[in-house]
Length: 142
Image (cartoon, rainbow, N blue to C red; front, side, top):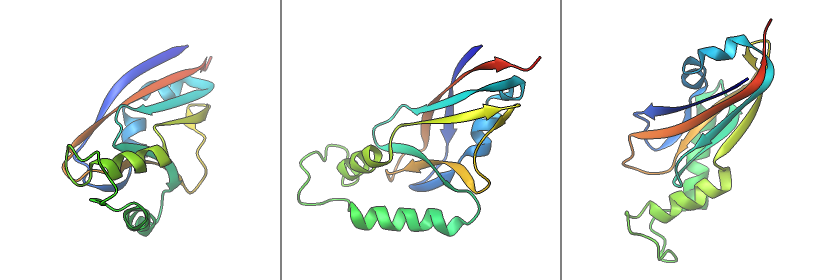
């Protein structure tokens, strides 16, 4: 079985946001998969997705602080600044973290670890929505 849909994640400010439930709520078909893979692709070059700590919010705050220190906005080294001082830094952060994830599915559940969640990593200051492509390939439960 194959399923693909595009979803919109709205109203996320700059930072690292746990979106596991938003993803799962948009694919009710997940409950009918015996074994398979969920592939998630973000359709943007200035935001990214990753998997990390799903419990303590301070982890997401620390990610944002670290990335901003490591890759500052408005560096004199950037020539690509057409969309503002956070433009090039957002592209660099996105390339480091990546634009897709593959998560195993078993018996209708994502097989994330106990402390793992899906993050939307918003690297721009003035963006209010992002689009994700969710693709499931798997065997249906009988």
